[in-house]
Image (cartoon, rainbow, N blue to C red; front, side):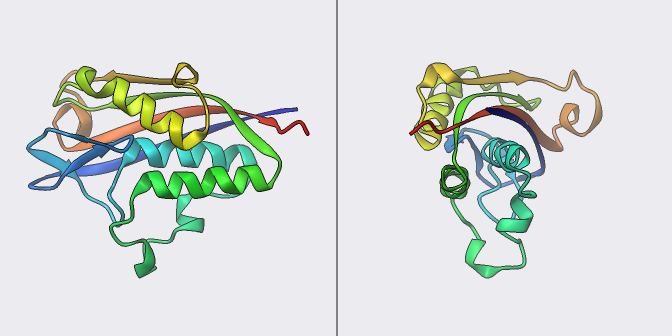
Length: 160
């Protein structure tokens, strides 16, 4: 049996903050604001898993009003979601994610993002797609005000 989930996340970009995507620190003058480390890529993937499980979203499991999650490593949050999926009898088959960010260019970081996500998801890097797109100068992404990520994930039941 299979399930598909869709995840989406957006974070405002602010000067002086780190930009972390897929657990990778990206060289940038502007970073993402958030309660945790604001890793929009990891958040979107985690939300996709939670969606496939019909288990709500990250805010349900890791509320931003809870001080335990302040500055949390988002790969750790993703690992907890993967553990939840495993406990429900599901495992990740593959993920496809698109990061929308005007600057900086992400091509030099994509392979490391894929590797870090794959390790956290317990899959081979060949099962993780990370694509980078710009906003073509349009909307909050195009004006360098935000980073947005969309992710789709396929889960299958764990065979015993």
